[in-house]
Length: 188
Image 1 (tube, helix red, strand yellow):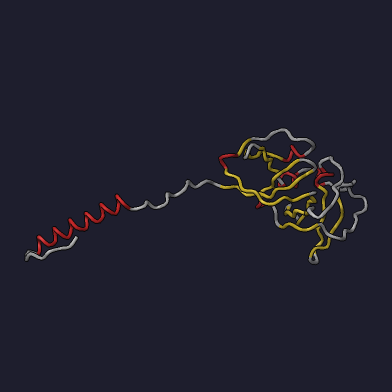
Image 2: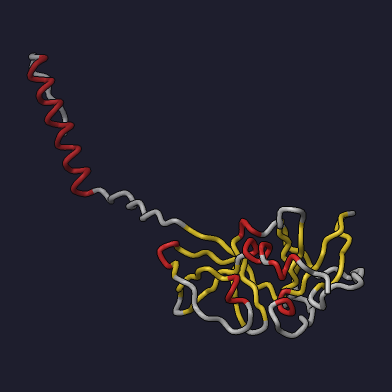
């Protein structure tokens, strides 16, 4: 569309407005719409690990660090069997607890996928040995569900879980573990 000048500024203004209006109408009619904003969902992130045959998740914000199993541990005389020992990590002593043994299972057999999940219990850092760390997992809060029965002693440290992809993912709480009297008393 072109404007033809016919001498009247008012008429030119009206014509210009009509041309712009027509261009806008055509743009809306023929244009591809902008992508719609996806619904914002609150996400929950966790670290996925195995204890015996149970796959669990711990909140990412509870884990201070993830380490390979230390090559050398110093045994602690008079400690519970689940207390594996002390590791020297960058000049700091880190108690290492076998989580599976603490929960009443067999002693964890360490391998290339074994990891130590380090958390702050308030008085200092503690490392939890897990037989296998699988990776990270994201969950939508809408999939949060209540606590379910679990085999072994882990259930008392699980307050909720997530239902996703046809599976229940129990959320293990290191904070609840750290407050447990049994966990605080590592001496025999």
